[in-house]
Length: 196
Image (cartoon, rainbow, N blue to C red; front, side):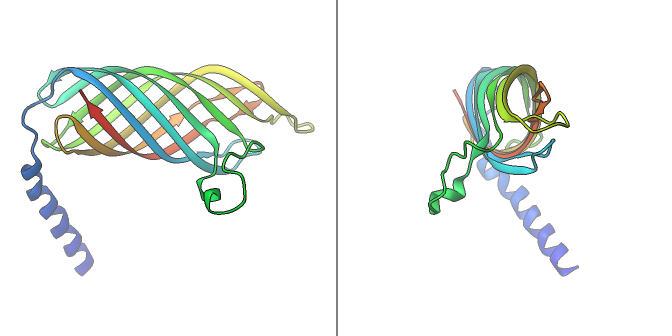
């Protein structure tokens, strides 16, 4: 009970402090660029592993109300074979024997402020990917390469420090399945966005 009251007091203090960082206006049309880094996890076929993944995106949003922006985006991601923990040992940082998924995205997105600073986000679109891994066809495993156009989607929430800059936490799903190779990947990430 005491921990719950402490948590509620901290949340209330954060909400009370938010106006100190309040934006100087409502939503405005404009270009944006953002980047995500996080944990990419695949749990399909012969794979049950997670690696460091990253994504970069850019696009344009239109203000549809003082607190809502809708837009279009394009981006690139690498979700498969980077092992940051190996920076501190003699193992390779890029693990070529692992599953590997990367590709281009194109879609729509939304940025919705529910207070002047706190926001929720959503995105979805097409995912043109290339992947390498072991197929799951029930016979002797064979390492193959595949590519296809599938889909992606994600949600997030975060804090806008100003009309131009915000940080967030995100969940994204990238569908990638072709030729018996299923590299569909979940990614939990932190992001930073700059709006022009």
